[in-house]
Length: 128
Image 1 (cartoon, helix red, strand yellow):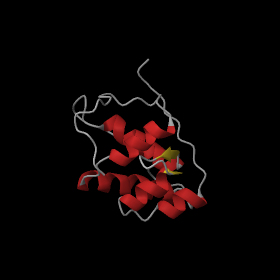
Image 2 (spheres, rainbow, N blue to C red):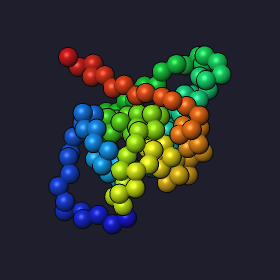
Image 3 (tube, one colour):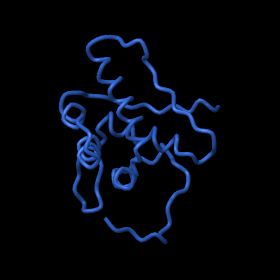
Image 4 (spheres, rainbow, N blue to C red):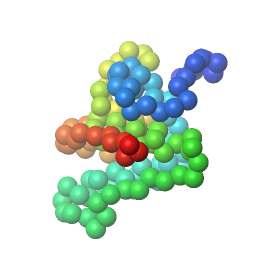
């Protein structure tokens, strides 16, 4: 997919943006590096494991050293995928985020996240 590199984009990730077209753009344009792929696999594996038994680690810690290192963006994408949020793609197709993202990045979790589970993502800002 080609996009104009000179177009205006938000440089700060905002959880408050919930429009399915805006969310669709974020999901479509998210770049999955090998390290991000590994982190996504770890988080989703742990999430799915919790369906059968309570795992020893029930939380995931997302850390980075610098402002702008991608922590919030990563968290927002994970939230969309786990909740299979309805998104509108640039071609105007409306799909679930899990179904689209997993297919695009060759992740095996798509059918489970989009059909078997009903998950709600809640984002909380802990910085009063």
